[in-house]
Length: 205
Image 1 (cartoon, helix red, strand yellow):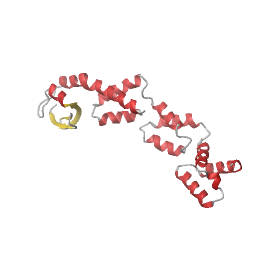
Image 2 (cartoon, rainbow, N blue to C red):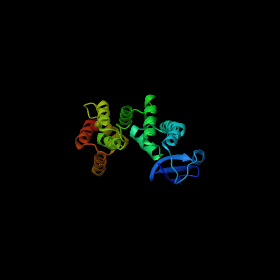
Image 3 (cartoon, rainbow, N blue to C red):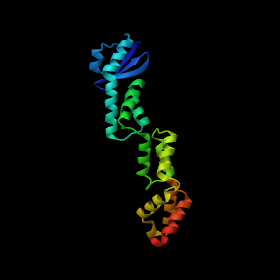
Image 4 (tube, rainbow, N blue to C red):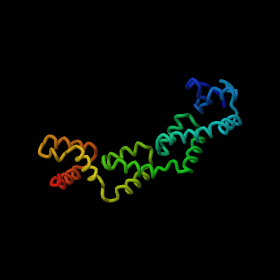
């Protein structure tokens, strides 16, 4: 393959383009070490040497670092490593590596995600957020079933929101009541669940 471009990414790092396509990124010292120059050929042996001596280890360390900053789904981690210009096969090895130690687990992630939000958000809102996390539909469905079971779970969240907004202190104010109903509806709560919570708790306010 021909090195068609060596483009600076930062003051220390470069993007290496092979046959017109981005292949990987190296530090400038590594570019010099491997004697990489635009217009010259990069043999398969050289590519493997770069992967074995630099990219594989670096991708694993990068994955570990990213996960130490915040919990991520497999899809989120994969996309971040792609953004960092690691080759696909190197990314797969890094993903397998962190999986082996249990550092990524999409089912665990989805379940925890729901549990910390179910008291303040509707099922629909949580579902929409989970779909943005590059999780499979099967894992999302499993986590929702595990967390909510057959009960739905939204009424508890509605009650906590109403209490936080001191809804029952303003139950005689139709304007405020209407505003809060609208607020809950926009968050994805069903009208019937809202009505049921209000009816069940008026006498307890």
